[in-house]
Amino acid sequence: MKTILVPVDFSDVTPLVADTARRFALAFGSRVVLLHVAGYLDDRVKIGYSLMPVCDLPPQDLKEEQGQLLKLKEHLAAGGTFPVDVELLQDGEPADCILAKSASLQADLIIMGSHGHGALYNLLTGSVTSAVLKSARCPVLVVPSPPAVKRAAA
Image (cartoon, rainbow, N blue to C red; front, top):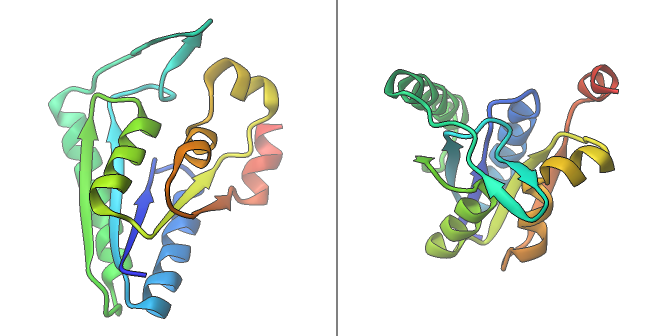
């Protein structure tokens, strides 16, 4: 397993996703690519079958997200013997960006989180994780959100 793609959104599940990626990278000597797709509020709002972009982030917010990504990279790389790269993309549907990056990297595994939202939420807003699961050309490991987050969301 050469390359592990790890899409992150800096939510409560991100630390669990990063820890899982670290364990896999250490076990297999893999390269980790942290990916964040910026510029969308709740990814996108689905209205019927059309998708509308909700917002673009101003440059200062991109700097903050880049900083979060670099901080996560430092956390992952600390004490590890595997390379960690970061990529921040703006403007694009998150699932499409994840799938495209996976293909360009020829990723062997995608490790990503799930927020555990219900069927109604996924119907109205869609689920990035579900879209990636349906179309990925490599295995996808889904890390569930922490139980405390699930209880608070219910």
